[in-house]
Length: 140
Image 1 (cartoon, rainbow, N blue to C red):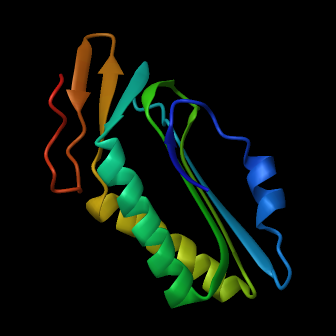
Image 2: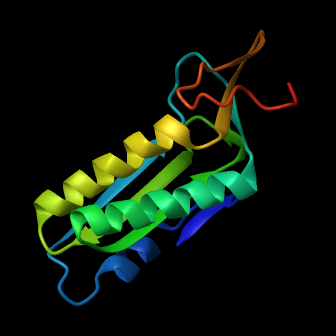
């Protein structure tokens, strides 16, 4: 599953779905809203482009690391501290491929998917400097 969504993610369901014939390792990356003196985080995406980029990243990782299964779910909207932001589940025949594939996916997302985050504090908010090279969204 490749998705950009408001709803939270059932990681257990994703893990069960990833256990296909030949699977020897399932790696889960769960990025959460960290308590860096913020109250919430707001995430925005250029959804059509972002989803296509996530699909391309999943395809590249699958081919390069011989992955048997890939899920990438990136949430948008307003999230509280501790909530899931990004969930990546990969399955492969061996742990080396699964770890490498997961690492490749997260780094590729950070490098080029148009998703932005604003950290909200008691005193307002601040856009987090991005690694995406696409600038921040139109709204503030």
